[in-house]
Amino acid sequence: MLRRSGLCMNLEAFCCGFLSLFPKVFVLTVLLWALYGTISELHSHLGLSAASLVFSGLLLSLYLLSMYSYFQVVVVGPGSPLDFPELRLTGGTSTNDHYLLPELNEQNETLLSPRRAPPMEVLVTHTIEKGEPYLRWCPKCNVWKPDRCHHCSNCKRCFLQMDHHCPWFSCCIGFRNHKFFIQFLLYVFVFCGYVLAISLYFLYDFFVKEQYAEHQYLSLTLVFLAVVSFAFFLSVGCFAGFLVYLMLRNLTTIEFQDLRWNYLGDHSAEYEYDSTGKKKSVANFYDLGLKRNWTAVMGDTWWHWLLPISATDEKLTGYKNGLNFEVDEEVFDKYCQNLQLQDRLNAQLMEYRDQLRGRRNQ
Ligand SMILES: [Zn+2]
Ligand SMILES: [Zn+2]
Image (cartoon, rainbow, N blue to C red):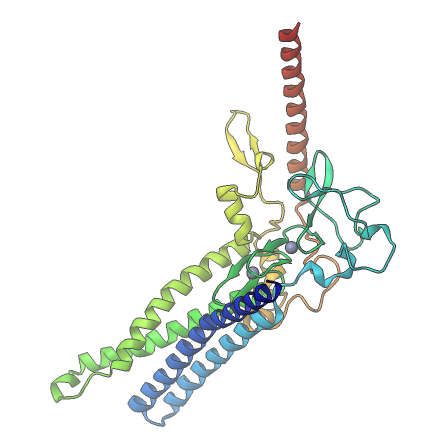
């Protein structure tokens, strides 16, 4: 029985690994075909001219940048709290109190107490519960979960500042590979726009010069290039635009969905009421303004923005380590005040309910 279940697990792992290859092979094949097709068309229309070489060189550069950023997303990975031994709850040989297992509540999360806290110089939490710092813990990975960290059910692991699980990469997008992911989308967007412009130019040339009247055939490769590049240009462009918008607001896709559909839990503290009683949302306390939100992901200099160079490796301390995040203190204070107010109201309601029950029982 045990042998059979082991065999099934191996077979399942093999099938999952094999299926995860499909999107990678598909992406690489389509891009390689577009590169080869466009360079062939340039060569057949312009010959070995300087213009043909320059256009082909630009296309090849965009292709190589796309491929490099694609592999960086997979190789670098999103980063996990398990990479930090200080945050692991089991397996440590130390008798330090930080390694003691916490008591769990119903949501498999635990209140932070000084005895059980991970080292505060490593981890500062901005999650508050009943006026206390509240630290989440993953029972599957046995690790403390920093702010913005989530467990991926596909990868079966916790990831720092998790954005989403991407089936086209068969991995998660998070703190370390977020920049490469956005750059990959932008490179592919420009690559597809470039292929589309070249193929439309040659198609226009063919019909305007009426070459079909001279019994010349329309290249099917050119038509396919125009159709496929247009489809990718549109879809990748919309997705890249959405992710850049979220990055400029310092929101991950998970946080955006949570704000919109409220699937992670209670959000009453994220709203306030103005003097007329109108409900409005308190700003996101991770939002530090457009420029700082942009540089936090894309790096500080223009060559970091243009080239697929890591913007997180060189600063592994302070706010750029994926464990701690700088917040807008003013908005965070407002958020805490809302929580305290809500707790006081809840306590008053409970007291009132108990009084009513007491009167009924008398
Ligand atoms: Zn986990
Ligand atoms: Zn995942």
